[in-house]
Picture 1: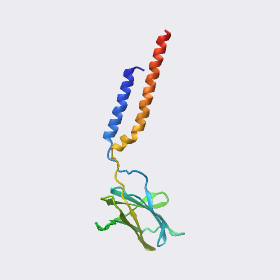
Picture 2: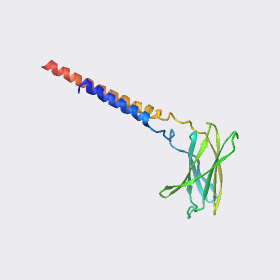
Picture 3: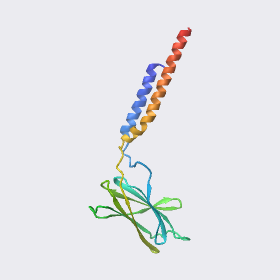
Picture 4: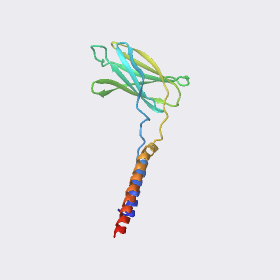
Length: 184
């Protein structure tokens, strides 16, 4: 492979990376998996776990419900998440959860708004015809990542390995050509 082919391949690779970074829509992701803030606690007849992605801006909450022993989760179950800064600078905002279909596991999901990285009180409220109650916890929202620049940052090790690989291939071909010339 000649030097011009190697240069063209590197330019194509670099152009692809630049295009990928610039054309990626803003990702609604976070840095890491959801984590539990309430685990296997009893509220009335239910056993409940609350998991969260507390990203600044829009945070997500997942409520996992285990039905009463020998029963099912009633259709009239209403779940609400209330969030409020621990300082009390804002009134509590209440968000209703909706059912997510997870093939056998009953999970409810809701999204809440966080405007600052500080301690927030989280109130989980359940209510249905067979009982309900409340649980409390706290969470600190995580700052957003670098947005579209995350892709470039996480791609750097792979680009480095690719550059080293192309360099090694080019040096090997150059060495072979020089050995062929010396033998002739």
